[in-house]
Length: 391
Image 1 (cartoon, rainbow, N blue to C red):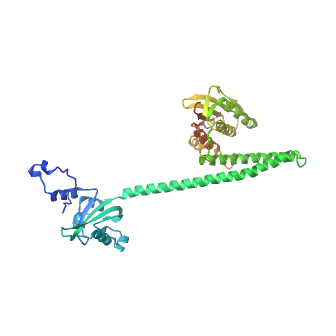
Image 2: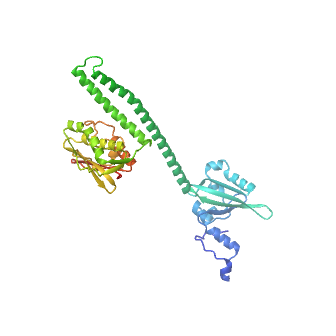
Image 3: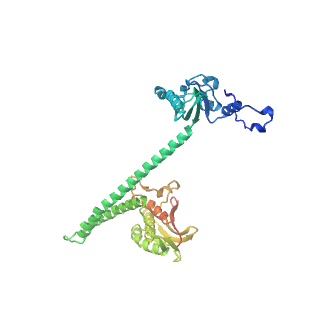
């Protein structure tokens, strides 16, 4: 029997290289080897399943000292549900019939805690073929099983999240398409009434029609944002990248925002934008990003100026939109690029929009190989910088 007091592996040197006083018999070498293994529980059972030997690895895994466990039946390591089904007896019968039995399952330590074990039971027979006992090797695989379960849970959560995202994207896309049709009809009929197709219209009625069309355009803008966002989420956005002068992007977009700025009493100005600054970008999408930035700047600026400027940078070329608005708190600066986030939304102060404009703009910028970033000082204004690859 192996000496359970042996706690450390001993390097083995072939007998032929050892001086006579250090040579040991094969039986002692085997006992020393088995007794020194810590990562595996290695012990012998008699033909009835009672424990006959015990190594340091078995003590480490199961918690019993040799003098506590030798002579007891190995079924002490099995949980109650396995004992009810006589799993220990079944394993010995299988090993006896086939020479070997292997299993993975829960086992019980001395302190009652469970661990996930890999168990191999090998039948031991004498030269005449008579069963003289069993060799049992146990490995503690609890950590491996926990890692596998975590990986499986992570995979399942990822699959569920992807399925939920797909369902959300399909819902947004379908809803957006369905709502655009009646909204366009509303605009069309309102325009026909304004043109007095069915008879004269009073000034009061014309004002109501103007409000109807303003509301229609507002709702259509929200629907378009949702549709654009769903397309980006689904990876359905295509980019037609070409060389685009930044000055052309600015000169195209600024007139679109001028009426909005004038209505709020703001000064919309263009800073330096040399014609030699050229981006490698999708013109339409770059214009969409700049339009979102300018519209936001006008919306969040009560008085003062909104300025557009262009420059070269180490990362490419940039268009900056600066305003003298209320600014953004430092802890909210990154969140403005998250979907459905709107700053300044409260019961007393509601602003139009879905909170998707900046999220869409950043995704479009990154889709073109660029980026969108912001800096701000509360009470003094904000600066949004669109970076695009140089053309």
